[in-house]
Length: 63
Image (cartoon, rainbow, N blue to C red; front, side, top):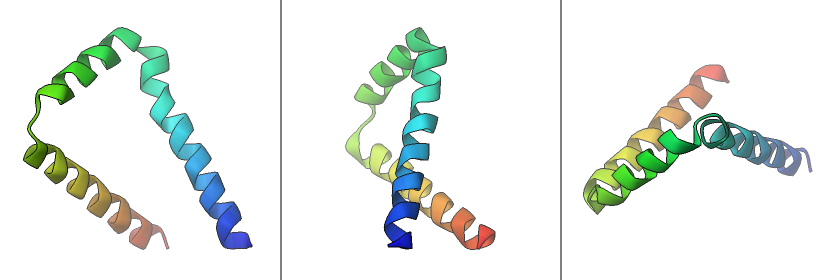
């Protein structure tokens, strides 16, 4: 049961962090989303992979 609680806490923190930039800088956020729409799929996949690997490595270092 503790795992699911921690997962829910992590999800909630992700939502808070993801919402900071659109809340503080909505115009810049819109520009960023427009730029992301122009990036090809391969580049977006590489960005996603690097993000996941970085997150996994940081979790490993923390624990």
